[in-house]
Amino acid sequence: MKTLKVPEATITRLSVYSRFLEYLDQRGIVTVSSGEIAQGVGVSPAQVRKDLAYFGEFGTRGVGYNVKDLMRYVLKVLGLDELWPLVLVGAGNLGFALCTYKGFNDRGFSIVGVFDNNPDKIGKKIADLEVYHLDRMAEIIALHNVKVGIITVPSHAAQEVTDLMVKNGLQAILNYAPVVLNAPENIEIRNVDMSTRLEILTFNLSKKDYNPVT
Ligand code: ATP
View 1: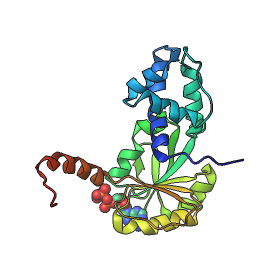
View 2: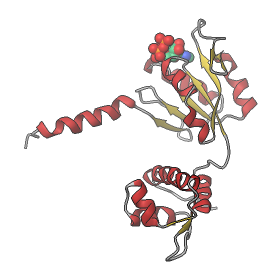
View 3: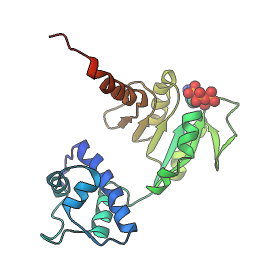
View 4: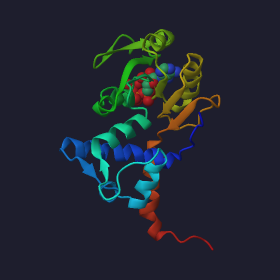
């Protein structure tokens, strides 16, 4: 089967569309046009049509899209027609916040194992989850068939945690540590660098006073 190279920006918008479609569905709305989706999420109607066209012909001219069908289809494209067990390493403040974040469950993500190397934390509970020693990672990954790991350790520990995740067979990592990780090419890594995001905002806010040297 030919693999489709879909731009990451399109995937990001699909995620946004899926939430908007869920919102419409919950309100009993049956059909929606590309123009309405566009308006609902703040992109152009042409962009919506282009994004959806990556995955085949949708909608009926003049009638629009069936909300339920399109929502299910977009969720399937995003891989969200199945449940995704996750493991998290780093039971600090950020790890705690993510473990107790309800928004993951709503999308079919479920943290099934939390790990730390601090003996004071091992055996303690975060919500329903016991914090495990790193030694138990292989066992938990195998038990739940986990493919995705989340890193919430400090920067200096993130690479060794990555190596351990790779060694234990994880295929994708969501990294909250503000550091570039090295991993084999087949491992998908996405960084959530919250400070960088804030710095984009502060740059944009202060830019009005910024005169580039020409
Ligand atoms: P706290 O002060 O309660 O530890 P924190 O969020 O300030 O919380 P951080 O220093 O950011 O803590 O570390 C996050 C978590 O990562 C901590 O629970 C820490 O024990 C854990 N950690 C640090 N290094 C490693 C490692 N190599 N392997 C696993 N966990 C680690």
